[in-house]
Amino acid sequence: MGLYFDHVNKILPLLHRPTFEHGMRNKLYLKDEGYGSVLLLVCACAARFSEDPRVIPPGSDDRK
Image (cartoon, rainbow, N blue to C red; front, side, top):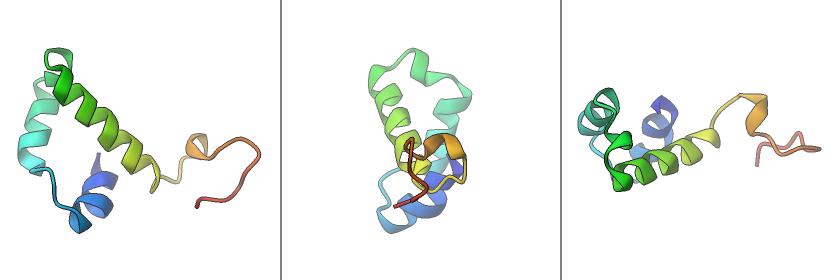
């Protein structure tokens, strides 16, 4: 989640970080489908900036 706020939300500030993190701590994603959908979107956007090799497509070493 930090990667999203460090890279994406700085350019396109759509989410209020304290409010979003409060929802995470309270497991709002288990009760609210909309929040869960936004959480998955945040994870997908953050993966673009991750150094984790699991987010690189198979057969590629290109991060772009």
